[in-house]
Length: 81
Image (cartoon, rainbow, N blue to C red; front, side):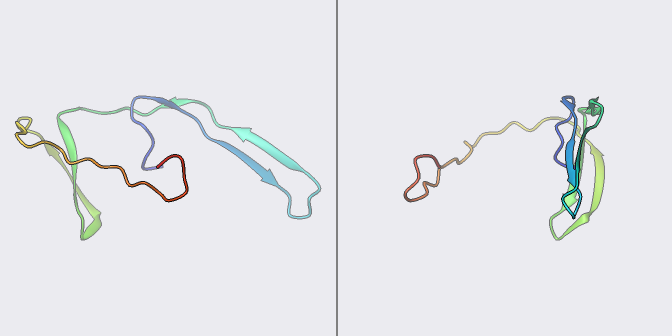
């Protein structure tokens, strides 16, 4: 799972049902915590070739000057976005 949260406990649950409907089984994995690794290293990926990645060391954090653009897109006939 490439979107599993780093440093947080996670586990997976699965429910299997026989094709003929005669039975089912529910299983849960052991809980693990994914090591977040060294915070000074980041993953650099090429948007055109997402399979090609590189782990790089950050020399210093950027000093952001511009505000981040944020917005909410409202869906018609829904109470929440």
